[in-house]
Image: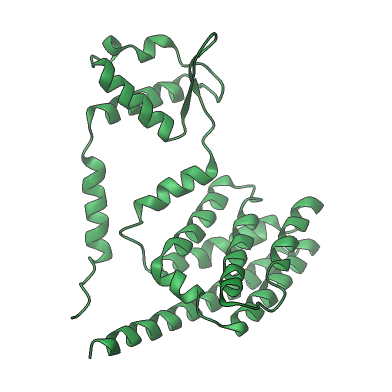
Length: 265
């Protein structure tokens, strides 16, 4: 039987927008409390005023208010403490949790490989240029340690797959040192999307020693440019790396598509 057709990216995005518009009462209250936190410049560790958390304040039942507080806690924006000195407090949102939540938005409507690399080819060179000459010795050592994870020839398919993921981790580690937090967050998010896509996981699991060598070549050259503070060279190397990675991913995706098509003919 032919494979069931997947929804187009446009229709998938429209469906996501419709789902986001279906707001329930607890969601609305959670948003209201969030706005109060922003308007009053509350910071992580600050207690949320009790008056904001009363059912009558929001003209809602206690159950509805509890659901709203659960939403805020799930989002990582608040935390609750019991006992003396307890209450509801503002929490610092964890980057990894935030990435995963945004990633889940695209879990069942993933972007295409060209969509992801269209952004990576622009943002990752900017990232590389921005950190050139600005990394501490400790940060530089962290990046070198990531490379060492895939320097040696893998002995098993599982080891080779692990090396592919370690290469992606290199890009995540680099993005964590970005002075522009939004740039770093977006670069990490794009890598997270690649790691979660079924098609990309299948490609990463395919044996390809030449791919590991190519990745090492680019990243070693990139580290040299970063160490010497050559931002233009760092951006050029990263751009070439992203272009080569995109070509490889698209080629392998097309081969897999053809194989899948042959299986049904």
